[in-house]
Length: 442
Image (tube, helix red, strand yellow):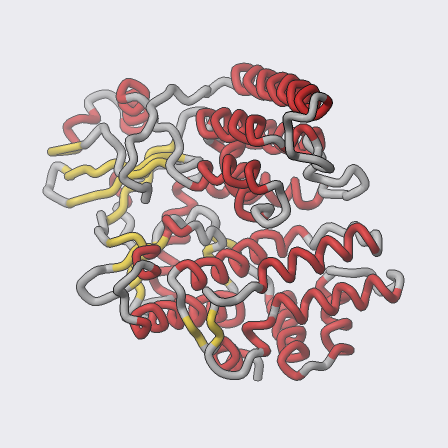
């Protein structure tokens, strides 16, 4: 769900040529902005010494505004960029991109009506007693509207932006080109596998019938978790581009991190979230891989966690999850050989890689798994793990020259693991992650 700030309304560019033209305009704006920034540096008016002129706050603002108006895969990848590189980019650039993690521009009412007409056909209005054309929330792929069905069911309708599904491949390719232009992706780094995985995952997210299946499957898997609530799908009003669900009301989960909240509440919610990640990976082998804070809300009465957005669900094969179990066992036992062997098995590093690079990868794995190695409760909010992992990763890349993209099948898993850490930090939870994972490792 989005915050309470007023949202802008703008028509979603639906045609491929129109979206391509907007990418061209954005590239031109970034280039012009970098020239202006370079000129300011020449006359000594810009403090960004040693940083690419493309990575200016002004350019970041242009990038964020354009992507939030384009929506679709372009904005989704911008959100990932703002999350994953927040501790690597210049502070002003990261802050400007952070707006992408808030609500997108909303569709004007006329475009919403057309989307409903395409999905339901002529006379669609008869299906509803009420339908609020002002959205409850807006995101990268679609926006959510409150509705009351003709028979009185209170619904949340997730309506996909027009043209999103058709533009995924071109949007992903164009964003990758922009990242190389801005030098956010090393030229020598082969990301073709990751690009292909991003396209696959985004095509899945754009198919709301697939998301409905994921919702039903996930609800069955967590039926034994009384602290979790998954909305029910309403099949009679669900199509490939509109998803009809129960309307669930709750408070933003970030509110738990505010002043005056009992630490016991934070810790209890954090424990449920961490245990859920381990169940998803090792027990279900089926994971909701979008840990955006907006996808979690809290029932203020009983602190049940309301879970939303199952478009980005990923199934893992048994071999992969067993490899992760072995590497986690090695991490907890401090067994560097087992961690090294696991890193090779999963594909984080080649067996014939230079020894110092292999050892650097092992060091990085041990570091990022610090909450698992820690005996007792781990204070996520007090941890500086993100900064230490950033520094070690940069050292591995630039001093040791290790340029190796992670296996494509792990990209969205990493997104969930990082996002879950950040979520526990945001709600200021203290959790014994070591004790929670042990039962899953045998």
